[in-house]
Length: 155
Image (cartoon, rainbow, N blue to C red):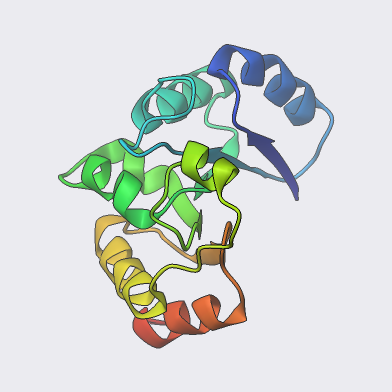
């Protein structure tokens, strides 16, 4: 399996992804970070990023992941019946509710609220029908992963 990580503009990602796609066998996952409003750092929406890459690659990525954002930053854009969100199968969320800029300026690690973090992942399971991969990003540790495991359905 291969992974492609990006925080850059989508147009910079496509040549990289096509190169990655043509040089690997199997499947790919693509992780994207989200800002406070659920958009990418470049301004594209999650929907635009997923549909653009799927159209350009014939839906080659096996699935997408959301990375490096607190669940409350992207949950609003996932509400409602949207076919593109079925392509999201993984999360690596931040423990902190702070923006990327605030995190960059922080002098202390913000571990957030672990109980809330776990509860939000249970809600995300309801919003993302194919969610199967859980992990943590900025500010998380094993206790955050335990909080996720304590709250999600393992069915």
